[in-house]
Amino acid sequence: MKRLETERLIIRKFEEKDVTSLHELFCDDESMRWVALYPAFIAMEETKERMKEWIEDDEHYALVEKIPTIF
Image (cartoon, rainbow, N blue to C red; front, side):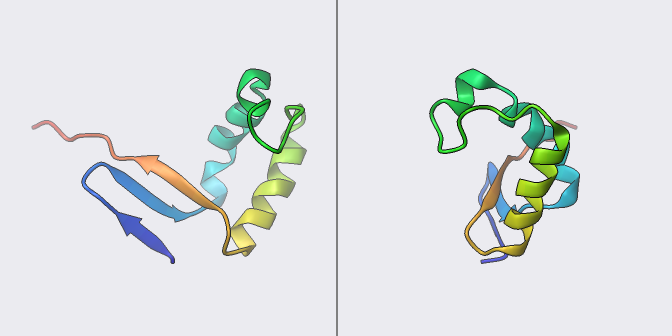
């Protein structure tokens, strides 16, 4: 699966532009204690390495909430 869209959500492969948002999550110790990546990451390089692996595999996907357009 390359990309799937619903009315409110996009499921897609990770992209390099996601690294900052992903790093914010990875640095949050409270969030990371509930997933298999505990303890939380500290260095951006750790996030970049993990992200590179995820970009190359077919097992990890980004969930992106669509922001409603109001015009």
